[in-house]
Length: 331
Image (tube, rainbow, N blue to C red):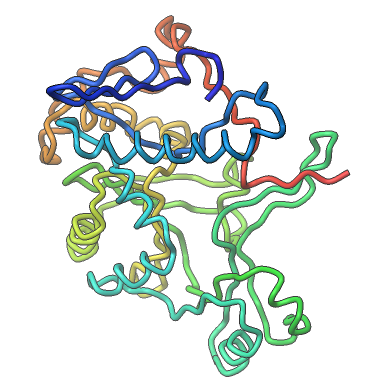
């Protein structure tokens, strides 16, 4: 938070609690989309000797605001406590399995002995992936390394000390004809097959280069039911799920991002219309059915029409954070 009023907040207590975020005071019935929360940035003019104190005060103020929203008569997508809970990979995998989804055999560890046992004693092909995306960037602004999923073989394992430098996720590889991005909108789920021109393990890095195509597909009934149970137990109403589909047509759960990007699907395929569906979901009553969402989606413009309209110019561009935990800068 800096001197800009839009980056300030106030909480007042009298007969009722009142929360003001930027220039908007929350009223009963409001909808708050809590997405990709970043820790507040204190005023840079704070004296160096006071920075630790200021950081601590902002941290506790931030928690006070985020958890207070959950107690107010407003709709949260998603509640902060739920996002903190489900953004843990181990929780996701355990919950997905308990809800009936196929989950690859997985090890999450920084123990060299555990990693070697898992990889060397497993007859299946294995992969290794990070917990979150990360970009290494030179001071010049040039990116030179990006984390991505890769196939791991026993002979590739480094010495034990290196395996303790950073924990990782080790998992059975799902040999897949295609991937699926499933988008959860309350009680509705929408699935899209993702086809990579080269069949790469990780389609995310190449999607921006036009090497991935998206197609609308039906969600198997058992997968849809499992996802809805998963969402209810996690306490979320929105999220983007990734699945790998094997040659036998089984959907293997990989992960969910409760604040995941999804509008790129409309850019890949103009027949998807997720932008309109999301706006109908966001502005409709909590718990609206899939039919209700689709009945109202025609009330909103397509993403292409919105991007070409003057309405977009009225939205102030989002200011990037001064720091991000997903980037390293090297000299």
